[in-house]
Length: 401
Image 1: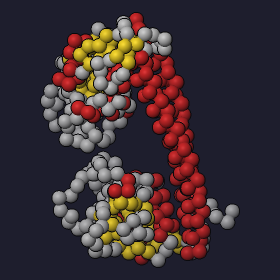
Image 2: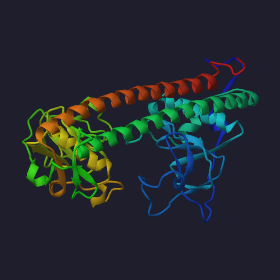
Image 3: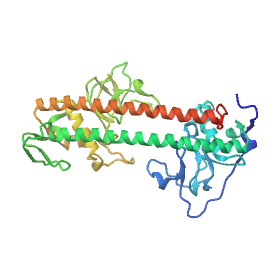
Image 4: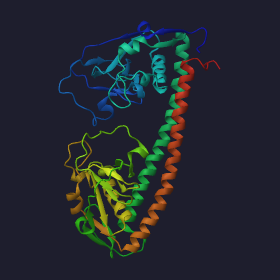
């Protein structure tokens, strides 16, 4: 239902698909999933596929309405804040309506999975959202004056929500950094602040407790490869350190192997280091039995596995692995057994390792609980923002009231 005095029109009658020429000094513009349409150089350059030839590239001006042809379903719809050029995957639109009202309505369609219902793309959770589809969709059209009032209201309300969202996200980032610092402090200095210290031969660590030893990985760790069992599910080591079956967490977003060449078995309790994403913290203890590609290093040790896990994560947090980078992906490294074996590890007495692990397990659980609460707040805020946009661009609520 929409207000009785509103009209509804197909996109082809209210929108114009435009293509502008490129100018000589145009930088590349991207439409991000949070709705920001801006020059890549203003936000980030890494993580994009660079075109060898800019076939079909088009000019975009400040104020242009842009809908991403592949990521529009996820909210990649916005008003450009920059002049630049973009690939033809971006739909550039003009209209005599209020552009921001149309933008908000299009985002509401994304939030309500309208675009996913039209999906014809081949990527997981994506759709080919080109002009021919945008042109055939129906749009509710209030008077221009009412559109302006709706936009004015939503701009203010969304800015308030976004500011609160940003504050909470900053708190989460601070908590994550605090957790990392606690882990590094305890696995390199121990629990006793009054212990006698000595210099370390490890480049990224200054002083260590005098009674601690240091050993290369090849003397304390064992690289193991177990056979795969018939009913094993696929295990993944995630960047937050969880090592679990994909089916317990998510199945989408992974490349599926046609042949499981070199796959290995993993048991509950195995220490796992991701050979490509270990630099980002993908290091943990498996909670499941399953199988995994050879990119995962499965390790055993007579030390406390969780202490070694925390120490390895601390190396990740301090960019030790990035310093060894030889991979071809941006912000990645080939962290295989031959490198893990040559690194130095701090080795406290086993009883002390156990106490450090006990302390860190409890402390990290406390921090993670607070982080989870704040993430839930972000989810609520995100849902609230989407609901407000929907209610006002469809006339369910009136800006007058």
